[in-house]
Image (cartoon, rainbow over the protein chains, first blue to last red):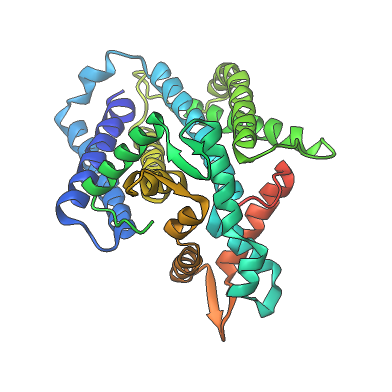
Length: 175
Length: 185
């Protein structure tokens, strides 16, 4: 129970705290690389803690709470829903990712490739923006006010939360 | 071990049922915009997943009977299996967090809402939003990050896929064709 259900969750929480602190206080330039290093460090930390706790005999007490068969099944169920989440994210990437759509259009250009102008013609981002606005009005984040578009209260709260999160994590404002 | 193996088997079955139901249709369902499509697919995916979930229990029991449980003689899970389980779950938590982080960092919807919120009148026209979204720069930025990631290369003003990019494009194209998603993007 300790190694499977408690320690990974504790390590994941520690990872989130470390990530927020790292981005807030040190603001790394290569953010993706920092994230990957932090993940690898946390995984190494998990292995070391698991080994230490096994030597110190801490986990025996936890293992009395839940028989191994239930722990096995609980881990299986968590993994099952992670697989569902993974599929849903693959769906999002295939359906809405700008990079993936561009890559598909570039591949269609064959070995001679495509120019930026050809890419702009085959994938107009203005249409994507228009679709995005239509969806956001549909879910009441935005409202149409004549020729203008404004935030609803829900949209305003969301925008403020995102602006706060981005400034706290020192994310650049150009995305 | 039987729990994770059962999760893999039943998740594969659920994926086959989900994707199979689109393969068997002559044409994909039609939607007025992207969001109803997303809601339809997600709802359907979740129902298939929940419907298949009870199969995990007989599957795990059958795997246990076949010897795929790796319990120690005292009934506890073996140490290596525990470590693999723990690392798999940790990877799942990482993945979940990275998705949340990228929503904060890259979400187009959030960017639109922030642009409106930062405007003096708290409202913008479509043309002003297009300027705020910086479409031309978005093409350049995306292509630049694809070049940096080794998915695309540029030669004499033309962009071409690398092997890695072509494989990813093939996989995404295959997924789109199986689920009849249309061009998307």
